[in-house]
Length: 229
Image (cartoon, rainbow, N blue to C red):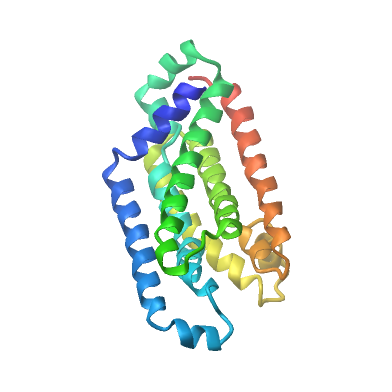
C-alpha cells in the first residue's frame, strides 16, 4: 500500500495539469497576501484582522478546489483498468491496498499543496493558520473520495472527466443555493454536500464532512473488490 501511496503522490508532480494548478494556487495565495497587506490597517478597523490573509485562499478552495481535484484525479482508478496495468498491481498487493494507496497518495498531495500555500502567507500574517488548514484538508478530502468513487464505478476515463467537472460545478451551486431556498429537493441535496456544514456558525460541523469521505472510500472498496479486472 505504501508503495502505491508514494507512486500516486509523486506522479501528481509529473503532470502538467497538476503543475499549472499548483502554480495557480500559489500565485493567487501570494498575490492575495500582498494585496491584503497593503490594506492591513483598514481590514483591522473592519474587524477582519489577520484572518483576512487566509480568506483569499479559503475562498479559492471553497469555489475552485472541486474542479482542481476532479480534473487531476478523475481517472485515478479507471485509467489503470483501461490500460490493464491494474492487473499487474492486483498480483502484487490486495485490492484494498490499491484503493487505500490511491486515496492516500492523492490526499497527501493536496495536504502538501495546502501546507505550502499557507506557509506562503506566514511572512505577511506572521502566523500559520492550523485550524483553517485542518478545515481545508477535510473539505478537499470530500472531493478526493467522491472522485475515487466515480473512477471506481465508471470504466471510461473520459466519462469520469466530464462527470467530475459537471459535479464540481453543480455541487457548489446546489450547496450554496440550499442555504437560501425552501425547496425540499435542493435543501435535501445540500445536506450531502460539504457547503451546508461549512456555512454553519460552529466550525465543529465541518468534521461531519469526514463521514461522507469515509462513505465514498468504503463504497469504492466494496465495488472494487467485486469488480472484474
